[in-house]
Every structure is written in structure tokens, then in C-alpha cells.
Image (spheres, rainbow, N blue to C red):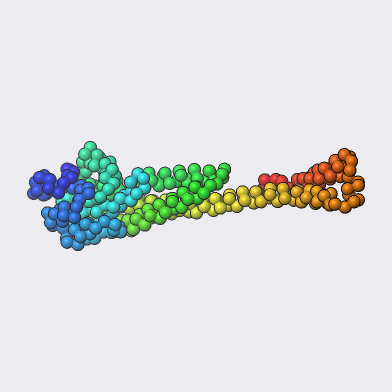
Length: 311
């Protein structure tokens, strides 16, 4: 099986004449090139129009002799990669604007182990796009664990912002993974009706892709639940730290309350006070001693009542 990379490749007419299945992998094509490709392969005008416009939802359109599948993979950084996949019994065409790294594994595998059937060749490309979700989701899982461990030690605003970023990323992945799962649930039957493709083989190969998409959807939902739990943990930890700080400030304020009373009382300009606090013993006993005694009594009381514990 040959992999071609240009619409005007001279091998295309020869392969079509020999009815030999091939993969035309187009990257960054202009609207004119897509129109030329559509006319050369006899694609439906609506299929050509859809291929010229990116930013579409995942879908599978059947045009009798060929089908258009809008399918998504994911770049290593988590960016969705939209691929327009034209399939027939004699060829398959992929059109994408970015994320060509995703196809490297499928292309190298096809070069080393040529697929035995057309259905297997189509499956390998779809499988490569589907499996690109797993490394991204694994990194999200590891990052959630790291954030939760960090929040138990010292919660910060940056951690909360990253939780929201991860949540938005999972929502974006869910918007493409769930429709693709639903499409592949019936995709084997649709593609199996195309001339040159066997219905039974198509169902068998695409069932594996469907199973992977089901697993991806379940992982995304479980990680969303983990993020909700992580956010609750963050709020709970912050609240507990705020309560601990409030408790400490309350203890300090309560200790200083009698001290303020003592200094205010002895600071009054009454003759009785001034005549009886004119010796060092009176100063240290009544003044400083009274404040120390009040502080010691309050500390003893707080410790006994459990106000100074971390619980």
C-alpha cells in the first residue's frame, strides 16, 4: 500500500487504473487544491465544500460510493486536530491543517507491515487518531494527583487556576470524543456498504476503535469528577487554614485584652494609683506582674480547652 502526499502525484492515475488501494495524505491544502482533489476523485460537491471548511463537529456522511468522516485526534500538547477523512473501496484521503505528527506512527506501521485489507488500512489511521487521546489523558491524571498532593501541603491561587484550565481542556475533549463514539457505533455498517469494502470486516475493525472511544469517554468523565473533588479539596483546605489563622488571631487578641485593661487602669491619673505605684515593687508587682499573670492564666485556659490545638 502506497502513501502519497500531493494531489498531482503522477502515481495516482496509475493506482486508480490498477484499482490498487492507497492513502493520499494532504496537509495544509488550499481551497483550490481541495476542489481539484474532489474533482479528480469524483467526490460529492457537499463533501468538497465540507472539506474546505474546518472547525466542524465530528460526523459521518454517506455519499453512496464514498463517505466523509470528520474525525479528531489530539496533539501531544492537548490541542484537538481536525481531520477530514474521505473513504472508498479504492482509496482513502485525509485532509488536515495541523497535527501531522499524529499520523507518523500509522504511516510507519503501514510501511513496515502493509495492511492485508482496505478495512485494516482505514482502521490503522483511525486507531492512530483515537489512541492520541490516551497520552494526553494520562498527563492530565498525573497532574491532578500532583495538584491534590500540593494542595494538602500549601494551597495556592495558581493551583486553582490550573484546575480550571484542566477542566476546560477535558470539556473540549469530551465535546469531540463523545460524538465520535456515537458515530463509530454505526460507522462499521455505513462504511461496510461502500463498494469494495466488506461489511463484516469493517464492523470487526471499527468495533475496536469504538471500544477505545468508549474508554476515552469514561476516562474523561472520571477525570472531570476528580477535578471536582480536587476543587472541593482546595476550598476545604483554604477554609481550614483560614479557620486556623482566625483561631490564632483570636487567641492573641484575647490575651491582649486584659493587658490593655491593666495598662489602662494603672494609666489613670488618680491620686490613689499614683501614690501606691511609686516604688519598683509596685511597678513590677501590680503593673508588669498583673499583665504576666493574666497572660499565663489565659494561655493555661486556652490549652486546657483545646483552642491551641491544630484540629
